[in-house]
Image 1 (cartoon, rainbow, N blue to C red):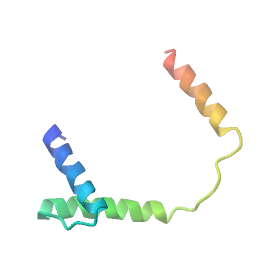
Image 2: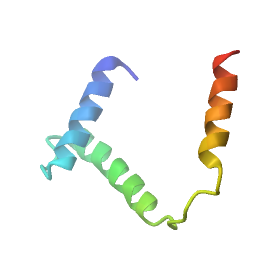
Image 3: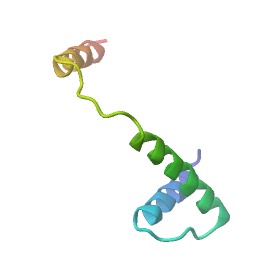
Image 4: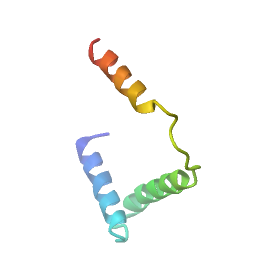
Length: 67
């Protein structure tokens, strides 16, 4: 994706967040994609992470940084 395309995508998301309508069919398509993604995320079951997850994540991050 080109930097220009990425910028147009960000603008489409910003307009969607503000509740503004799409300015073009391409922007409407982009907004529809993100709306579907957001709906799927909202449908996920909410559950707490397993105990110790943060320590394991930090240890992995430290290992990865030393490579």
